[in-house]
Length: 455
Image (cartoon, rainbow, N blue to C red):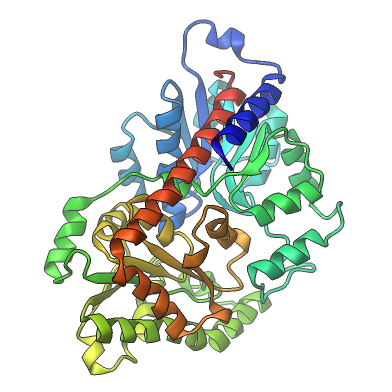
């Protein structure tokens, strides 16, 4: 989108949002700042789900600095709470859920509902906790908005969904062939009521447009992970020194299996049929997917003499990296590979990624962390990973997004080799991508401002 068109769209959409009655003018007349309730932090076993939250908070701080920010989290484990309170000392965190009566289950959450001016649902797949947004809207009548989510109607389990997923092109074709009344009633209600809905990929966007969603602002807006600024240089750089990883002379590699094994991670002893189906898909595809990353690692080490660091986006990937990426390596390559044998937080990951030549990931959010700190990154997308990967094409990183079923080790290595051969040009491409992303982020926060009555 060029600058003239962007400004024209922004002004028009802001004007539409401004037609909504400002229910809070009287409350704010006394001089208090506008308040934003961010519903986010869906889980903490994934640094992508952790990183959504500081990304959204940073964007709100930067483009809506007068606002008071309140976080309503899902989970804040694995040290993520400390990371947030340190990075955002003014942040107010409220806990609780919604009862069968549609009301908050804790006094602190009830107080936040009463005081806030706009509810913002943060990035995630399938509009996480959308029932809570429905309850908030019905109970308060206050504005609700959505900040960069995917709505994939094809992939997954249940109903007519396809557990095998598909390529992005296939998912788009199938999503747009669905009837215009396909969207579930509760989702349709809240999206029709929403002041803004930013889809983090254009497949979701086109699907919702085909579903005739009435939100006055229905646009593309990338994942809020791209806004995360937090770093832990002390911890990250110490790890690099301790493991002999030199700036620009190593790559980071993140594995993924097609379905996250939550039932094993949580120690479930009774597996459902869906659990067994997921296990069967993983058993059939793990080696064929991850051998391609392993082949790339071998080619990289032998061609450059550089090092490889395997690291996790999710907790289970620590062991996955060892089993599928490291243990089968030939001895001459294995000695150049560093196995990150512990989980980490996105701030330390960001610090390490600043020094990497490139990040190559089968999970979706590690490349976004890398782009934010200026490092080239490649996303090797699996067909079960929903339509969110379309965002890479949408914001200009299409050459660095490969479908795993259409790629092989040599092709993946060729993309890494391009970065190795001209790292300056690759970093310039990252900056070009981020210029466009920053423009979109400003637009997204502008919609929050308008909904809060502060535009």
